[in-house]
Image (cartoon, rainbow over all chains, first blue to last red; front, top):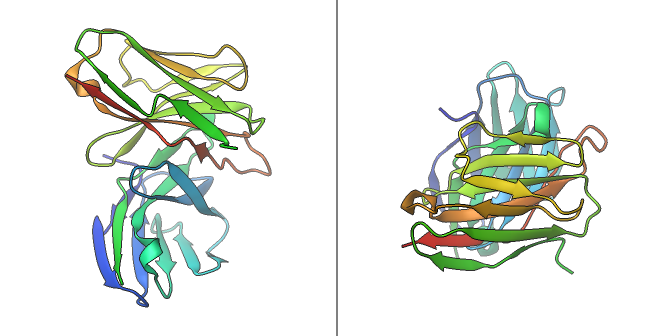
Length: 112
Length: 115
C-alpha cells in the first residue's frame, strides 16, 4: 500500500468555504510536503512541515502534523474557484536518492 | 523562463517502439527525478539521479533507462513500449538537502499514449 494516502479522494465545496484534506503515512519521516497539481500541469510545491513541527501557516494554507498518529492535514481557508486542483502529500524519508513518496491525491473542486 | 522543461508534451506511438523523453532544468539543482502518473493520478517515483549515483525504484522495468549527458539534463529512454506504459511522465529536480529540505520542482509532464 502507499506510504501517503489522502482522504477524501474528492471534495466539492462552495467558494468561501474551508477545505480540509488529510494524509496518512506509515513510516518515520524527515518532513512532509504538500503539492498542488492543476489539470494538465506539473506539481507545484505548497508547503513543507518538518517532523519536529506541529503546525505551519502560509497565506490561506494551514498544515498540521501529528507524528504519533502518522497523519497530516491541509486546510485551505476562504477557498476560491482558482483553488480547484488536485492536492498531494509527499513524505520525505531522508532515504538514498532523496526520493519523495506521494499519495494518490485529493481532487478539490471549488464552485463559484 | 521555464525552470524544468520536458519535451515532447504529447507522445503517441505503437507498441514495441523505442522512444525518449527529454528533460532540462535551469535551476542549478544537483538531483533530477522521473515520475510516472497513472490514470488514477497516483504518482510513482521511477528514478533519482545526481552526478554521483543513480537510484532506481526496484519496480521499474529495465526497459526504462535514464541518461544524463550533464547535470542539467536527465532524459528517459523507453524500449519495447507496452500498452501499460501509457501514462503521464514527470521530470523533477531539487537541490538535495538544501537547508535540510528536499523541495522538488516539476516539469509540465509528457503524456505518453501507446497504441
